[in-house]
Image 1 (tube, rainbow, N blue to C red):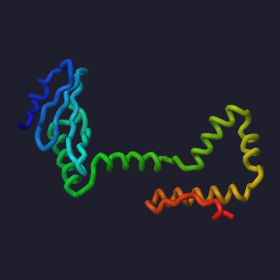
Image 2: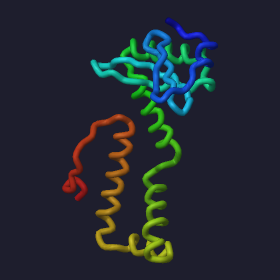
Image 3: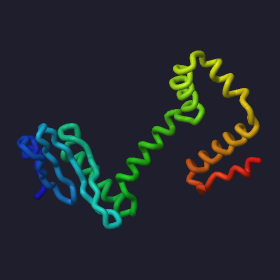
Image 4: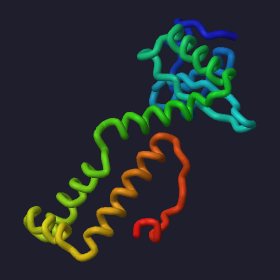
Length: 164
């Protein structure tokens, strides 16, 4: 039986979390802390999954039903909304400037400089080491490889002989 807004407001916390179904796989979970959370229960490839839709009262009953309907449409189209959410989160992180160069600079700054002193001295040690040409080729190969992976290309094992 579908929930009503007045019913939801009247639900109180208990010793254990409990659920109140709304229909079409959506339910409201009331936790001992008093928080009320919307979830959608669904199956993909025979596996049961649970998608968090939001919390009440931040997400009203009508908004939760709209989110449920969008998720159900995605499921019927063969997409997993939980997987889509995770991929969106990963894309946001990658797009936030976490390039190989920025991560390497952060590593040098936090780990190596803190341990050895000045950043210019540390960078100089790594810049004039032996086998510089091989390292440049390897880093270029690694950069190209990561670009292919990001674009959804074929993942192949590293072949050191190909760099020579």
